[in-house]
Image (cartoon, rainbow, N blue to C red; front, side):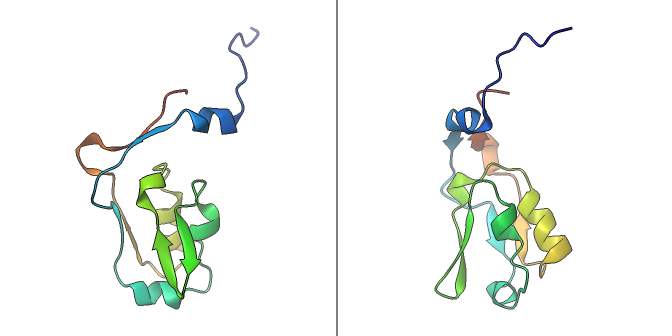
Length: 100
């Protein structure tokens, strides 16, 4: 059976993604010093939304951009220093996917 749905590139699908950000972050650090000592910094490259960046000797977390894949949580726990505390945004807030 042929696929009748049009193929939409990922970049275009993500462009339709909406965010209903809370004023409180759902991504916290148990101890920022753990990030400073982290050799892998695995949360940075694994995040498709570039939520994490290393700036001025500390980890910047832009939770408003989070796509809620949970990849950063797994990377931090498996390859990092277990500093990231990840939860879904409160009250149904967060990312709203509009196309598959």
